[in-house]
Length: 253
Image (cartoon, rainbow, N blue to C red; front, side, top):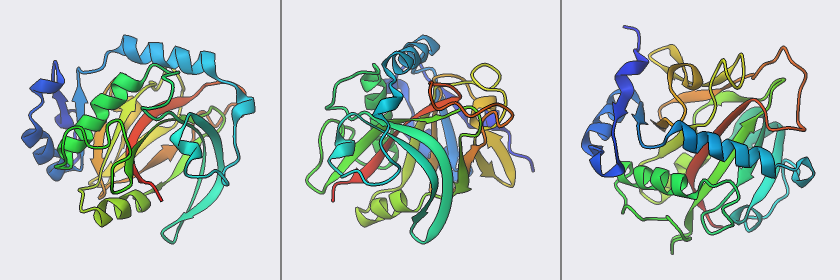
């Protein structure tokens, strides 16, 4: 039976209206849930404009070599080539903008991050404000950040999350990834995009879901990003292609 993406969309007018029992039930059933109605397209478009206006390619740091403290501030890096996570070799091409809650709110995303963190916590059976604005005593903190997959081939090889899952299991937390759509297929880029595989179906986020949709998936999903506008020249000088935001739990080592 083919998976119908519309079946995983839940509409709410406010955070207080969310039925988290229903969210967790649907997550258990489908491994992916979408919450719609909490973040407007105008909010996302305003954030994207700030990202573009604040962007300076000269601030790019290398793929490896930063310290844990570096990414606990506003920090920009370009990830190119392969890396090994828990014995699994993956390749990718994307840019990351680390933007912790306690850092300057240069992209106007902090209120959206906080909403996403609360949703992550409730889905993980953790206190609502856990790791919301600080590094917890057990070293966990919310690595609020934005990924840019540039036109001309930005991508991430398909995989299951392993490192973040291991951190969650170490702390006895249910692994939940929460992201938000910041771009749209056919508007911001013409081909490629983020996807999950459900029941052998490939579900593309930017094709099936709207700007501002909050997408939740668990450790069972195979996911990745197909090459963005591979028919165009690679552009690392501008903010173009696909954008998305994360609020993953990281471990302060």
